[in-house]
Image (cartoon, rainbow, N blue to C red; front, side, top):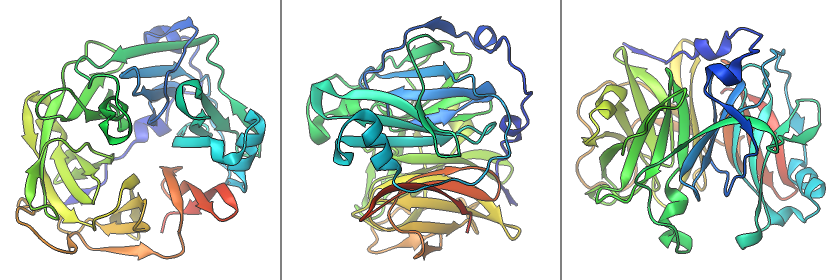
Length: 360
């Protein structure tokens, strides 16, 4: 039997956290981000931010812990609004990631203003009624955990491996899980850090078989992942560029050595997966996967508990069945709002827009 991992612990938190900063090991101070990419929420309105340039994960107390009715959002032209707020053209901003606070329903965005060494990094949030504000980091309670074996800084484009030291992160069962690259021979890595932060180890090197390439790979990082329960055991479902879908038992990542995942689907090459969520619809479980070139996929979980995986070269698609949702085009970011809804950042000829959708 396959069951979805339930994140009720996040959704049913107490409403008052007067000592959240103390109990979570956060200290008041000025936080200077060098970069801001992957975002994820933990308990008590704590926002995790991946700073790949510094190879560091930050935990920030947003003080956003008041429950709301999580009203639907329809923010047309949010890209232009952010650009106007920052005094630049829309093509001079980059929205790197999006996360939804499960308590308040507010949407948080990691945003870069400009390009090159003078890039300004901000965390913005949308209050659900049309207002965008900056999360001030001038005096904020935060903690940090630096990755011990990140790639060396330097390089440009694909050669800038440091920029891939943190490609995605998620909070689960008292730990923050981090995907990215290390400086080890088997560079693709999954790490987990207890929260409140404690010592971080070198992580687990992960290996997959990429059916489209016909070989085992250890140097391509996970691009996005989510948690899902298979046969009563928590798993990470991870998607890679070109687009193998791979499962890893969470328990296997505690070994701290090298783990081979099970490739359960090949979903098409020349594509970069962007975000994924697990949800239930009509008594069945699905994975919703946003992609750079292959649209939004609604992936069936039927048969995901099988032990065998793809371990031979294939052409085309194989494994888990899915349907492409033609009514959802141009999705750049995807985050779950509640059991029935998600929030998407969509780009079209008129710019970038934020809106709430029903999970299909």
